[in-house]
Image (cartoon, rainbow, N blue to C red; front, side, top):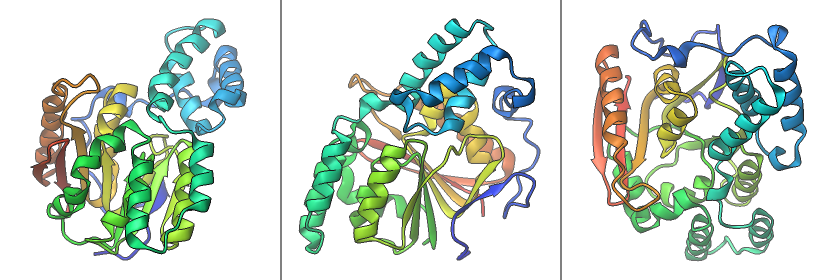
Amino acid sequence: MTSTPPDLVPAGEPAPAASPDSATLPESAAAGPSSPATESPAVQKVIARLTDAAKYRDVHPETIADLVRREGRATGDAAELERRVRARLHKVAALHLLTARPAALRKALDRADFDDPQSRRDWCRQVLAGHFSTAERLPDLDTFYPTLFGLVPPPETVVDIACALNPFTLPWLREVSDARYVGYDFNATFVELGNAFLARTYPECEIRHEEVLADGHRVSADLALLLKTYHCMEGRRPGAGLALVDRLACRHVVVSFPTRAMNGRAAVFVPRHVQELDELARDRGWSWSRATLASEDLVAIHKA
């Protein structure tokens, strides 16, 4: 295993494992947004307005700019463009999924007792209950990482893409792995909360405020986690999740899906996405494996 810390590698530099031809990926995944030099006045205006808006101050500017440029292909009217992008941001940023108040979480974090391992775990369970995605995982949390790490060789570096509140599962991850953990999220609220927690508990780990879907970035590590985020990326931009899995410079990638949708019904979108990953793995000559928990379906792509 490589001991190189996970990092973002600018496009144009060699990645540890280059992908073969990407003809199997959807065109929408490969097509980039317009160059800033050729942007219309409407696009420039809406990017400026939304990046300055208090409501989106925690959303990475590259995330906002990417959405505006892509929606700008459909309309040149600034008012209509802003309306469309705000609707997209509501889904993409998913701020409604965070049921806890960030300011209250930060105050509670500053007062929390992390010296006692059981107290730390109990406190983290309360935090994890404050986000829809991690709350779903709570019934399976004790078996989640043993199951996940049963699919891959022991890594030295782990990256958690779109991590949200998942850094608060580190007490459970540490029971099965001492890998260096780096999370990525485009929401500065999650980055700040995660780093405040890690500074007091696991100072060798960190969360980075990055937009990993932005053109020109790739992530390098032994193991990448895309936990219940692949289908969200596909909803944001068809083909984006598949393209990210393809270009990740990681030996192994674990993608997970909820077994049920938010309405409680079976997650009917999962078989389609699993088939996409299966086809990508076969096209690239990679192997893959799978495990299912009550709340989550795990697919592991083995590139090396």
